[in-house]
Amino acid sequence: MTVFGKGFFTLANKTCSARKHLLLFRQIQCSSQRNSSSSDGKGSSSSLLDSLNSSSNWRKGQLNTITDKFKAGTDPKPEPMKITSDDEVQQTWKDMESRVVRRRTMDLSEAKAKGKKVGRRNVKKTDEEVWLDAGLYDEEK
Image (cartoon, rainbow, N blue to C red; front, top):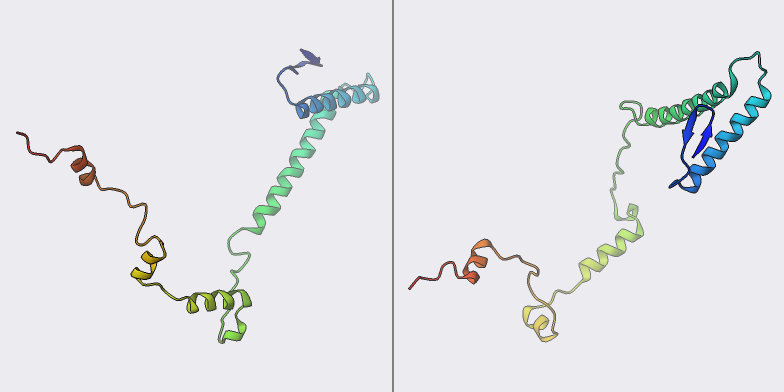
């Protein structure tokens, strides 16, 4: 167990980053003790609190700038493009459309001849079908 001033911190089961933060805490405490005079009375806790306050204020400012960007009414919604001719459409969409339009459909007999699967797959059985398989509807003799 490591003791820093009035607080107790356990380094067991902590990650490397937690140890680094505790070492940083120790350095801040030691440097502030060296820099503060005995008549000052504030000591290391005030400098640590000042640094924590400034970092929390910075974070609050960052979060406020992000939320201000997304507040309602400040940013009008962009209007969708109005396409009047095929020349205005992107080439990727033109290529996809031509592939889909030119695709030839197969007849049922052609698909079966080529060994392709036909119809819906992964259709779950209804409760009645499961009960029928279990013998619920069998007559008792």
